[in-house]
Length: 96
Image (cartoon, rainbow, N blue to C red):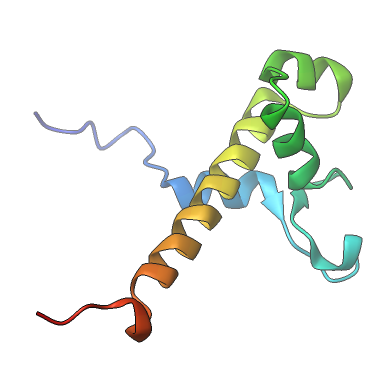
């Protein structure tokens, strides 16, 4: 199946970068939603406590659903990178 070249193509990294920002002047460089001072960890903690994205958006009117989804994607990407780094540390590799 051919992709329609007229349609924009965005990567997950582009999506995350459009919504999540780090600045040493804002919350000591913790990742926040771009244009806000709302840290990603606040959104993730809410989701871990079974608060849905629509409820989070209602509690934080400055957040869009895409902001919340980007925060989750950022968190999951970070978790995956950390676990991959751990798996491939020389001390964790087994030789046959």
